[in-house]
Image 1 (cartoon, rainbow, N blue to C red):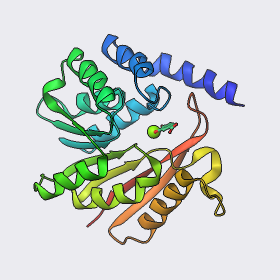
Image 2: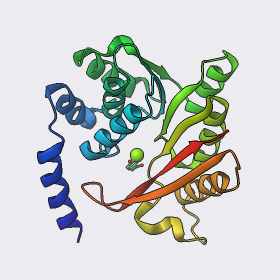
Image 3: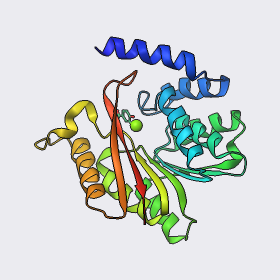
Length: 221
Ligand code: DHB
Ligand code: MG
């Protein structure tokens, strides 16, 4: 099965999601980061960009940068007047991301903030950051419940929140799992479900990254 997911992803991406040199270089630079296989796929990158554009997003917060591949999709989507703040634990990954964003000519509309993302996001709250229109959560999965709480402190009614990798090859439906990444994903979904400010769904995905899925959340008040 996974072989055919790969084939279909390759066919669709080749047809609909051509990468220019800057995107290709950003994707290929993932091998220089601490997590070479975690970036979104091209199809997912385009999806994030379409979502940001459909929402008219001008201010985007990303939690988890790595080489800045999704960051680049989002930076292009917000346009020259927009801004992306992206939070990255490791300085060595941030350096790769800055290089990729500079090469693409969007370095001036992106802040790559280095350090534990919970602390960086708290600092944004304390500094009274303007609300973000879209938050993309794609970092360490056990911290997802904390990232949701911080996203709620940094958004406004109408903002969108996307949480990556919540399906985890189906493990999300296993209430007995003691994998901290599954526990974090189940907890953030439970928190979303019980928060009356939020409307949400999860879409399962297959493709070059196997079987996974993302939560799409809209803050209604
Ligand atoms: C991993 C993390 C991700 O965000 C992802 O999309 C795929 C894999 C990982 O932790 O391996
Ligand atoms: Mg991810």
